[in-house]
Length: 449
Ligand code: ADP
Image (cartoon, rainbow, N blue to C red; front, side, top):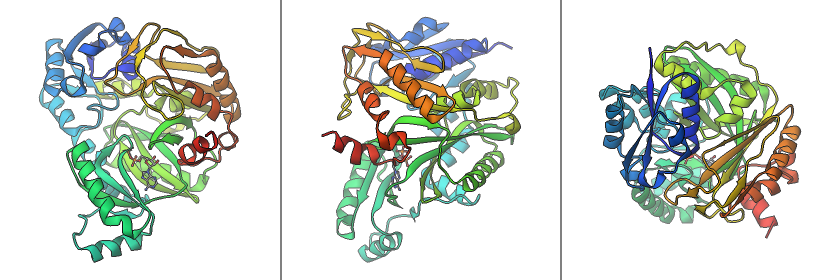
């Protein structure tokens, strides 16, 4: 049976999905906003439909326009990618109700696991530890609230239940900052996410961010594809990711991997997903589950040889796929550097025209990107331009290979995070794998001042 997939995204992930569809002989429909007429993926797509003006609300978040495009082109499935509508359970439900297969988990699963508080209570039943905290309704009574935060222990972090992309978090160092911080956090959450609800977590001071990739077939079979370490972050957003995570307590990790797979089997998890953890003093603390593909999926693909995007398509479209844990092996080490249209010091967005560029290549180097010479980076969307990924037999060799790739790579016309990566990859704390999630902002940038 022939299939046609509408790719409800833009940029590198749209191109990534398009390539996977082509390999599987699936017809493709791309959507684009008025400001995205020059997207590379449009040239390779079988069909493309303009779905509205440049601002995301009128285009990539415009559900009626996307469903009309799917209808108009007779698509049978919709691939959401990451960001935009990828974790919107109402969109997933709307797709099904309109007769399109949503490529991802069932909308009820997105609703449960995509909600940070519900997800925490579910994973606890599988013996998975969460960051200590409080996620019930915040009491109005000051004394009661202070009692709760005291028992968690300062510093604490206030997080918006509807937050995402590293936004909507506020660290509170001591009790006297609490009521003020809570008011601001709630107002900001209301303004940014349309929901002012806040929950409280212990602020883990020097953890690493470690995550587990899972894939389920929606029929009770699930596997894991190992770990990633994403501890190099700025503003709680990742810049460098690696697979596998090194220097972790193997016994605890093995237990955790089993728990994650059991959970996915039990909930008939369908498609790709990631369980995110903070890791400190040999303990893993669950943060959240992302019920979609992640930006950093290539590092896992490189060390396992398992094509996650193709698996997502196969599972959703009922094409044959064997999910056999015994056949998954981790080989070598992979690193990904995100090249963003941001300056390398303060990470301020810098859209504009690329006047000249050169792409790296060679053995063990992968380059995932939608940009090209003469392309104008629009100011409306996420600043990520490219992902450079290297695979080698050890972490040291993957770093050396990345340095070589970064040396070949250049972009002119706009500022990017290119130089940041060149500096970080020779930094002693990074090369010795001693960094935590705070290292970049609290030490690395300060040292360079
Ligand atoms: P989002 O959905 O916005 O990405 P997450 O809960 O996944 O939010 O957290 C993103 C990042 O924020 C983490 O990788 C970590 O750097 C930081 N963070 C979140 N919760 C905590 C915590 N309790 N203690 C310390 N850092 C935290």
